[in-house]
Image 1 (cartoon, rainbow, N blue to C red):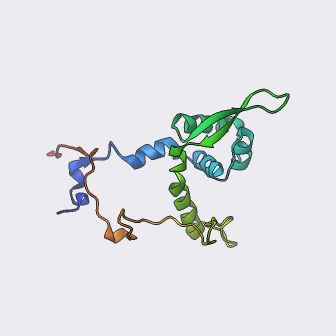
Image 2: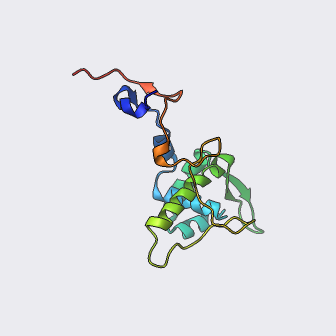
Image 3: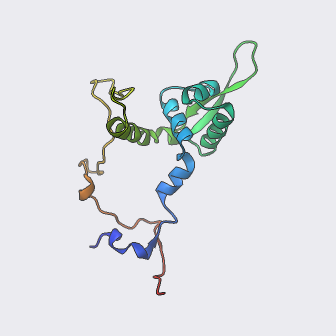
Length: 163
């Protein structure tokens, strides 16, 4: 069996899951809003303040993340105030946690300043730091050189360029 990467000219990345993920949440403010959602931020003003963006940018990103199904709006009303909306992670949004964890982990290793990372996420039960790892469905850790790329059901084959 040959690795699919050996024949890259025979397939298209038009159906790429990475590209589609980046289209949903691939800009800086969207990622930081997701970080804040995982840290428990729920209210519009808090997202804008904690991410350090203006209200128009916060509104646009929250609208996009809600439309994409990562966040949902739930109404709340404080006494004497108008109805407002809180933002909560959906199941789809909670499944985004490994992405945020991997970004934090990479940043802790390669982008932190001389003082080190700002936060360390730990497992509540044992106190060990939480890390993202590549693991196959049978439970084996998989280093880069021990993985292979196979055709998935959505692979688009292309005609060879004969020019």
